[in-house]
Length: 404
Image: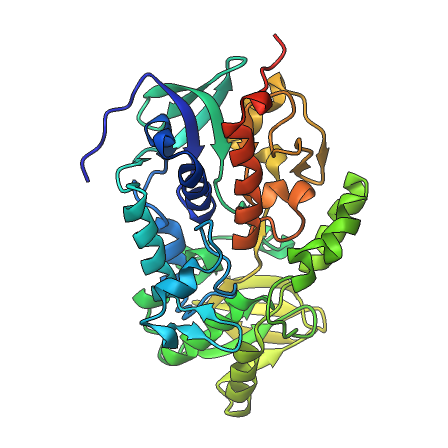
């Protein structure tokens, strides 16, 4: 890829090149095609959806959990139309697109809207408010002034259980990994004893992938395993639940978000496969079980559970989700100094167009959940966020100016 020249100023800077950012720029250019020259996307990979593609491939994920109507294009039926010659890649009964189909569809959008060279291959290290504009400092020590900024940087930091921080002594780093660090494609696990912790879909995919590669797997969950088609109730996609949600104070909204997302769930398909593997003694399901201590000794892990039972493993993988706390987000530290913002358990209280109040910095993804509901981090949330942000970007009456 030929690195494009960094201009001194840009109208809109988008930080991140994942599904949220792609959804936003496609929605924007669909309404204002001439805006293309005024937008620059920043991502260290220099390409669209690099981290998303890597994660799906690394965990052997065959298809998405979201139905075919949830995708970056403005027309909800566009993916179905794209799949007319590949109908077998929409997994029924809910038309879940395969990862290959969805990736090809996104690539088609990237070409259609001429976005191939829109991503500047650098990481944004700091966003400094200049009131009303911003200066973005990049990893290569370059900087650029942006009139407006959209933060679309993903789902946060790995969530690690307390017992991990209490491990004494040294151990081989690769023997204790968060699920985001695991790449099944690189592993041969024949005869290896593996503990996977977590009851979400990632733990199910990793367990199946590890068994396929020869491992003996224990899957440990604090609660009983739950089977759900989607990670939140479909009622959150429309007014059924959102009407009541929007009528609540922000503290109550945050509680509703946590309750709606629950502690992780698997699709019925994956849970059925795990139960089958359990019957064949290839996976041991340790439900309602929690680790209190892990010790690395004699080239293996000794794990003690709340019940007092001990287990021995060669590997531990933590499918324990991501910790979303915007108050610790490095790109929001300077924003917090210049634009005092209210927070509820790590979530900012944004204006109706997903801006930090009185500023031109927009936030997408899970950090916008107080305004969008529990699906904010999903593709459906990306669509809702894009609709709000695009309206503010293209309507002069909504292009507010910060107070000096």
